[in-house]
Length: 128
Image (cartoon, rainbow, N blue to C red; front, side):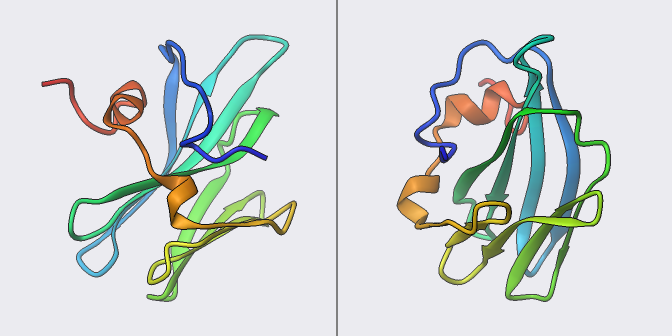
């Protein structure tokens, strides 16, 4: 299991955002992925920018099919990530802990820190 920070990004020219969740209370959340070809298929990540502009990102899936049915919702304390009505992840907005749904593994905030270049590759922020 890899976090977004631990994963080595290369050129992600086919990045796609599958789901977004925006509010003044929680900031912005994205489920985004990139296509790596016929055999590797899609790698999918969850990103969150809090109301102070701080980013974290966590790995959701690799060698996956396209996530057209990705959805996110919140209860104000957590963000729930679903695909085809299955829980794929839960992100705690206060502690910044991310629990990967299929594996049940929980990752601390430090493993989710995201570099600006990674956000640029996903088109979540623009190159200056």
